[in-house]
Length: 281
Ligand SMILES: C[S@@+](CC[C@H](N)C(=O)[O-])C[C@H]1O[C@@H](n2cnc3c(N)ncnc32)[C@H](O)[C@@H]1O
Image 1 (cartoon, rainbow, N blue to C red):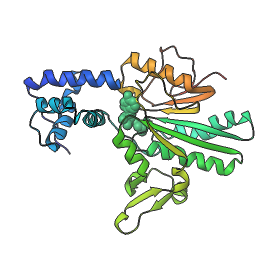
Image 2 (cartoon, rainbow, N blue to C red):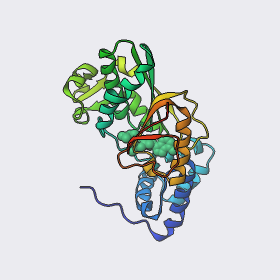
Image 3 (cartoon, protein in one colour):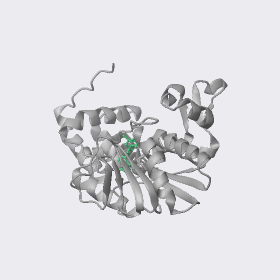
Image 4 (cartoon, rainbow, N blue to C red):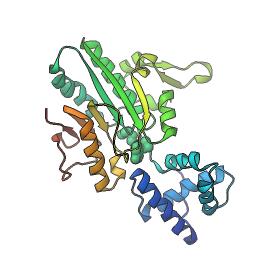
């Protein structure tokens, strides 16, 4: 059990609110006062790493032209929550292969399904998608797929591209898929697995902030946008989802997290379930 982070001292609260406001403006992530202790803990770790002593010194570093650009990227990294898992919310992967893909494949015998893993974190969701799509392709000649995976955090994108995970993290992956698509590490890499090159080659990683006006990634048949908008304010959720609808092809599917909802957002989507939406064909 880890100890709860200490409450920030009063004189830091004003500075923390300033950080919180800037983070919300740049990333859309809401950081009410209740989250300031968490933000303080994360900033303290970074301040300590840099050998600095206070939030004030850290603000100065962010203003220093030598460090400003790279430090802002670090700040955005530490503001994000990156929890993820292989086969998280598994019914979505079942629905994808048993309902969504067969429905869309009536478009023609040969097609390349374009999938966007939006807010991909350290890659577990991306490679879960790659494994189930590769398996679907084995039993459906003519079916091809490609995945674009995006996140705003450069740190998680680096980890995702490395595609290397400790054994215990891949426990949710069914044995047959593990045997087919994961390679065991040897010697110094014992206790680790790496995704096979054929699957890694199917994924393109890009840095994208959902707050951008446009998402220049092409069009998609399937968008996985799960457990990201839960951190956004309602108005931001609506704006981001509207932009996602623009890049979703007619008849395409949007998957959101089980605890998320698009109810009342007036989007051009038809619910198949509360977390699986379809753009009218
Ligand atoms: C909790 S993880 C979810 C990962 C995965 N989709 C899943 O469901 O397991 C949320 C991810 O969204 C990313 N994120 C947060 N705000 C973002 C923004 N404004 N633009 C792009 N990505 C963002 C974070 O960096 C983080 O990796």
